[in-house]
Image (cartoon, rainbow, N blue to C red):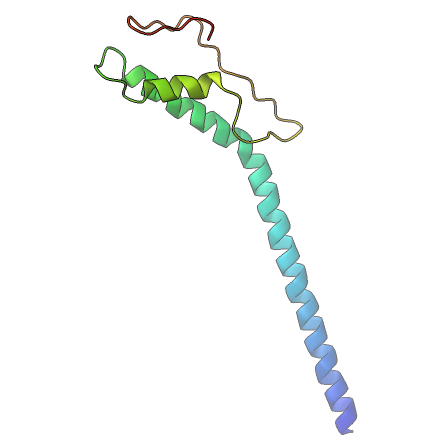
Length: 105
């Protein structure tokens, strides 16, 4: 009788552990899916913020982080894109600055 109770307790505990493992696996999977699908939006946000730096600093003295912003737009993405995401360098054609050398960018 005692042995049957102990076995039932262990079986119940084993089922609970399996459920906890399943929930843990699902949370890891959902986090990975969120990160993957958020990459494109994050890249677009970065590009938008960099363009804001460039346009806000127009006709302002000093660098105002414009050089870093231009380098970011002209560089390849820092992160490796997923196979369906195509990240291209941003075109800086038509961008004018009086004292900047914007040749070949």
